[in-house]
Length: 443
Ligand SMILES: *[C@@H]1O[C@H](CO)[C@@H](O)[C@H](O)[C@H]1NC(C)=O
Image (cartoon, rainbow, N blue to C red; front, side, top):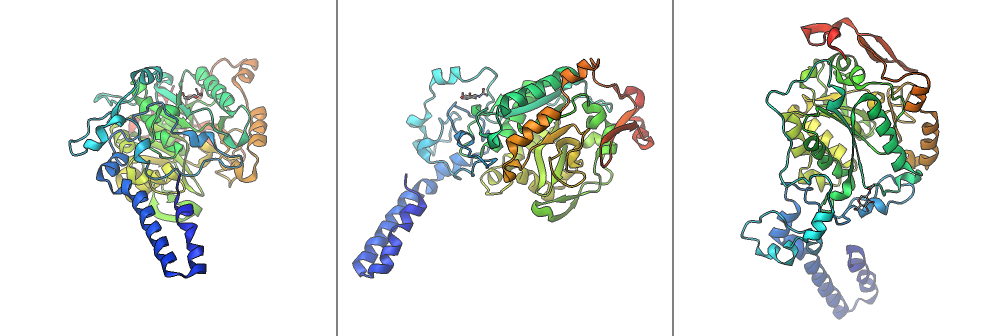
């Protein structure tokens, strides 16, 4: 296929050498033809609308391998390069949604859906365009935190990526999450992101439909925990309510009043509220030197979250060349929209998402819940580090061998972050205010 470099780059040096007028005009003509051929599809209003259509932007998966970038990932790169912004018209997936009449050119052969192909592709219900999830008017969020069966741990991947060369990463990550969920009674959900047609967007954007999909698939679930494949649960006895999901735990863990930072720790001038109300919090996330890190975060079923997921896949974000992709999109919303800030809580990085290296509240410590091998490819150390952490983690088998059949009962206790460890301490007084975080309710 022609690309801009070979198309334009080749004739220009010759033009400088030759200097003949005929030669130059011949080159100019070639350039004009090239530009015409290249730009025509993008000037077509229908094509533009097609690629930037916001309704169910990603949700029309047709089983094609639009995520092959993840497969072709090279060693030493955690992510493939961004995809082309606009997908060429000929490669666009079948248009399943009824198009307005002024675009008859889209209704041709491309609009045909192969029923056999459609049938073989899905075991779980396929999301429809403009899908969203339900939030019951009378949904009750217990200040003590959700019941275990109201929590889903979500991992999404196509299982094929090179993953920085980590051997058996996918299988190990699956087992790691499954045993944790089983031990606590949480649900573990895996989604094969190959099912989403991302319209040429980078595979990390599959996160948004995967989250939506999970809220739809588990209508009674209150909280979804997104955890990247290259993260590992290190201390599976930690239960999520005493850790971060009860209001009492939120009050001690939230980094209230902290400034949101952008890449290279640049200031945004915007802060998490110093008086955040746990009842209003729908997103719990940490930040590192590149801004928000969406490798491990919690999302609560709420009307706000419905809107957030809708906004998050805004085409202007998706097809922007932001280095942090979906994370930068979230940070953009946080920085520029008070409504988003009011529903989002920062926690120190280590609470959900400790890194192998990093400053005090970023680097993983012995008793922390999760280690996330973000950025390990920089040192080409992914496989080595993963195996090291795998061997030093506590598994549920280890817990049971020590006679621990159930999660630690930490009623009335919350975790506290110290420089060397995360310890459990009695719930502080301010955690009991307003009658919402009553100790006796904590389960
Ligand atoms: C995900 O789906 C693709 C396409 O159907 C398949 O090739 C791949 O093996 C699947 N991955 C997993 C982990 O199931």
